[in-house]
Amino acid sequence: MTDDGAFLNASEAAALLGVSKNTLYVYVGRKGLRSQAVPGSRERQYWKADILRLKHGERTAGRSPGELKRESALTLITDQGPYYRGQSALELSETKSLEEVAGLLWDCPADQVFKGEAPRTPAAFSQWTRLLEKERSVDRALGLFPQLEQADLRAHDLSHLGMSRTGADVVRWMTAIILRQAKAPCRSIHDHIAQSLKLDEGKASLVRRQLVLAADHGFEPAAYAVRAVASTGVSPWRAVMTGLLVVLGRRSGNGRFESMRTFLLELHQGDPQRSLVRRLRDGEPVPGFGSRLYPQGDPRAKALLAHCVEIFGDDPRLQQVIAAQAIMLDATGLHPDFAFVSLLVGELLGLSADASFFLIGRTVGWVAHAMEQYAAGEFEHLEGRYLGPLPTSKST
Image (cartoon, rainbow, N blue to C red; front, side, top):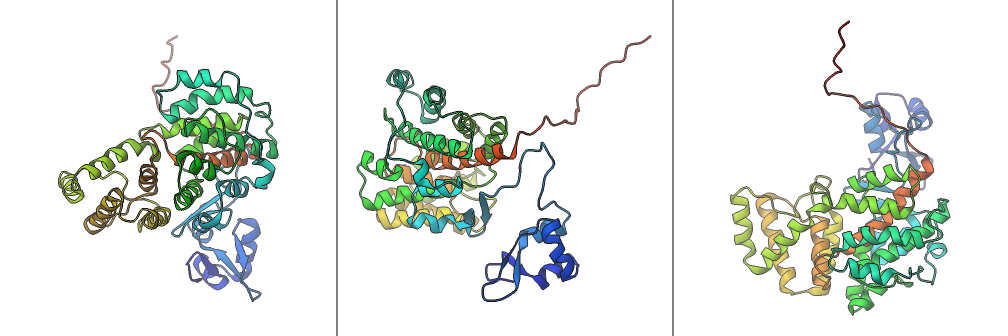
């Protein structure tokens, strides 16, 4: 097995499936097993997850016509964190901008879609923003996006390039809405945020990292909803609106922000140990800790928190979270999740309580899911299994 345990060699794969190597080679084409060449040899290695799915009788590739697409070339979730089209999101976050990652996920050169001109501002935009001034960021976006779509002459160009260009406008307007600005930016998103908030180079780098790491996380509930509506042919504006609606859900992974924000405030106002001991003693959940996908801790959260330590050092708010992390790890074995650390980043950078850079980054992923699903075609009406009362038969 390879060092990271993600691949098997031909002998291991064949043995796990109980077949010969020749049969294994046939499965590559017929059953969608993914493999890649081993550098410096004539051998190939096989993606372990595909082998295990096939062993347990699950489908590895292909789908029925009209079915909502559940296979994706966008993001792979591993113990080492997500990979965007085969490239580590953590490594990308070291040097790449959100625009470059959008180009990767959208399979379109960034310089073709993120050009040096800002999206058109509708004439009545200032009036709309005044009406929505007291609303939180998500609700402002939901109120403004239909108007921005109407003013976007390219909104309904659903070609690959057309959706990419619209996606760039959506990301830029999302940035303006989060920052409560009247015009969308035309330069790099993280540079624009840094200038708007008067951040130094180190803090600007932290913003860029967070945006890149937030871009996509596979088939989370909002992405699945985005794909469902995208298959019907709505514009990227409406697809992203669907993602925002799901984010508002109480059971959504991102819908926990309010409880996490309250918990952060609780940490800042008192003794982290006393607060956590009380919660654990009373059986209360601790918001922002634990991950089903990453039992050993979300690598994105770890990387982002480590960068916070480099930038903010002895900031009391950061130190309180570090103390809470140590207590939780000792008491429960749980680590802080990415949403919790993202919220902390916004707080440390002085972002308003109702806003989140997370939404700007995730918009890139939602547009990518919309593009991929639309290209796969519309899915048909599915026949459900009715469990209600049957019609009463008429006596003759």
